[in-house]
Image 1 (cartoon, rainbow, N blue to C red):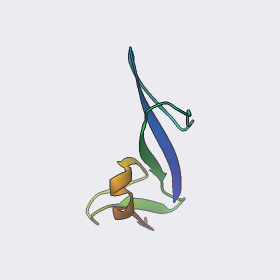
Image 2 (cartoon, rainbow, N blue to C red):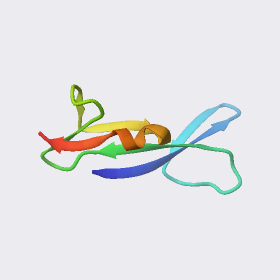
Image 3 (cartoon, rainbow, N blue to C red):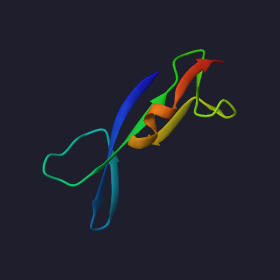
Image 4 (cartoon, helix red, strand yellow):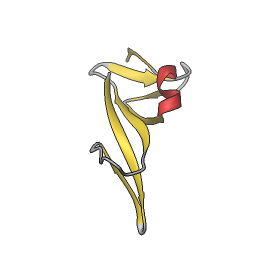
Length: 67
């Protein structure tokens, strides 16, 4: 599983989501999870995904399983 940190910045005319961290700028952090080849991501064992965006608090609930 690949984890990419995403930073969300709130501007005066919208939001920006980027893997680039800007110092001294308020942000919220989330993660983009990508399953390795031949695998899928699941949180509950019922629904499966190749790629998901999850909050920092929800990160530990996700795991990778065989396709």
